Image 1 (cartoon, one colour):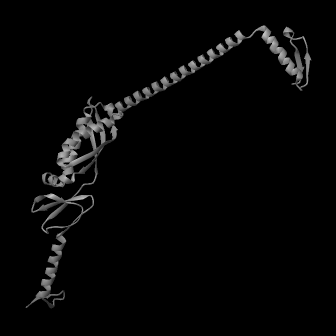
Image 2 (image 1 turned 180 degrees about the vertical axis):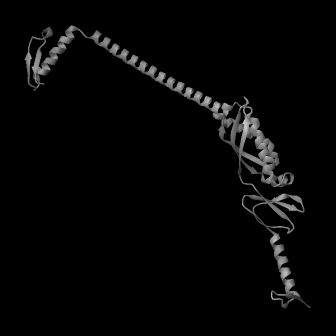
Image 3 (image 1 turned 60 degrees about the vertical axis):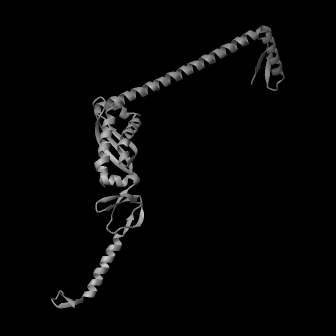
Length: 278
């Protein structure tokens, strides 16, 4: 027995049933083979779902032979980033704009639980709303100027401290929260900049005054040293000593080879006067 088919020209063609059976069988075998192999990409975990039931054990990255009726959902366990822009109130009620980056990753041991309780869109359902809530809650505990100074690191640390207990039980590990930029109201930004500028000028003036005090102290010590030297010298000198020193100097000049004229007894205290080219 043969099946009959018409070609495009309308002519009748005959295909044996055996050939059709082979084709159908080959396609069915290919389908079964294809569905018994699951590939979990690097940096992912495979969640196994069979008829809507989520298995507790997950598949690590690599090639796996599975039940052809099993559905494998790949979920990333790599570190990922969420960029959030939020308008949050400060302690004094001023509104500030924050750009926040949250580094997080999925805990592989809790991937099946998270998929069962939340689903594959857990970032939009759980993570992002919690981030917005924590950012606004922590910011409201600080003055706006704190977001403009070194206290930003402390604020980011407080955000981490508040958000980890909320997401860790779900299977999401928060690694780091970063405040990328903060935009304050213009009037407050101007006031803070003016204050910081005044503080810098005050520090600069303090440095200048300290330097002048040190210079004055140096000069005072130098003057005292000169005064002490003069006192010591004047105390140790006498008229007889000076006259003797003058005679000794005259003897040395008289014996030198330089041309000169020595006048004896014409100088003060009868010391010689030496005249010459050098």
